[in-house]
Image (cartoon, rainbow over the protein chains, first blue to last red):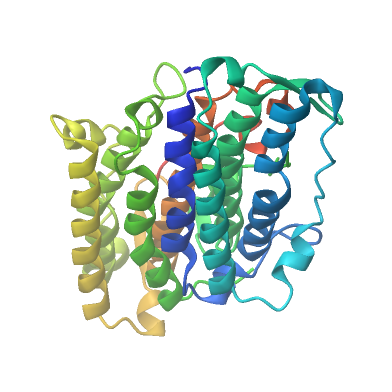
Length: 182
Length: 182
């Protein structure tokens, strides 16, 4: 397992919007608007959640750590914040918005010129307590992956019946769904 | 849940190579060459497996169903078949090869002009017994998703320590890994 490496984190964060764009744009809506049942998310909902994170979670928290350290607790992340992000939007609009916000945030992150000692700075999470800037940035990348993992699962679920007996062989259909948020 | 729909299947199958390309090309090798431990696969290995499937699994089996129905059993899929696909190859070469083979296979699939009654035709799987062409094609799409799900998990695993206490909130890190093959 590798330690957190800022350049590796940025490499991944840079690619996620393009990967989701390549996977989802212009796909039939039966793939992108269906979920796994009541109170679960579709790929469309997940995009709204990623957008909400770009606005309110990662960079705002990073700047709070750099400015106030442990003395100011992060605002709680709103798990329902995606609802207003997706209202009256098309999937194409969400993909564009996510790409634009991510680009802006990564420009801002790079401009901070963070050094190793900056990454060790500590902040305070409302539930988890003391966390480091390094952990926050690593989580930003892993959070992209948790939602790519979720989108794959939600989409595969739509073919649960369609695959017939092969369902026993498809790992994604055995996944219980353990997605949570930051 | 939706029934299997050939156009929806083709829409998804068309996008997977571009999605993997956008996610993986030129990523630092610490993301793409590391796995989850002994006898597990890296993203690089998974690409080799997808290539092997394009060569030996989906279209060869589809053509066998159309030609021989239940009278000829599919050849067993070689779960170690990726080993020779990845030998002496770069990640970029595997991405190119997967895209090329997928394109060829989808051209061939479209050229079959399958009708509803063709999709109901039956073949024989060496372990699962009687399966339909519809189930085989739905599985081709769901198999892409199972491996996108796996790649997300394998990559997130590399940051298991890096995310610190956030690991409790990241669904992908709770996933036990249940990937299997077709």
